[in-house]
Length: 120
Image (tube, rainbow, N blue to C red; front, side, top):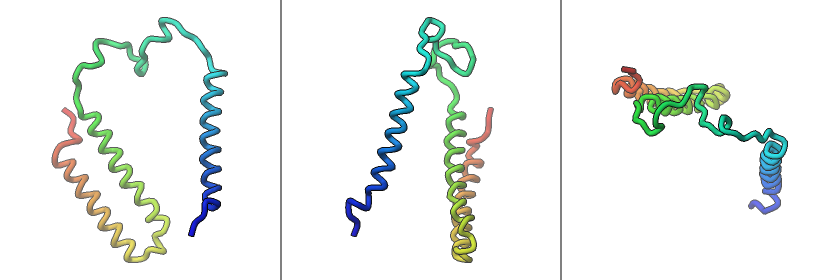
């Protein structure tokens, strides 16, 4: 049975983390440069001069590729704990990972078949 005393280290860690974030933000606001002006207040996008309206339509392919990257990247991250505990998991762990990889590869081939990664 856990008691409130057991959560003291967690509460202390949360308070220290929140204190560090608050201190860092306050120090940046206090110590950081405070320059204002027309040139400083203009929008900046990767060093490219702003042209036209920001609401103009454009291809969704960029977002689709970014979402697919995140999706497959997270799936690959799930393989790390398996690789660390490979010997302890034995044949059963290997079978589970093969099932997982089958689902990942099925999703990957589905994405390729639908042409989500083709640029026009």
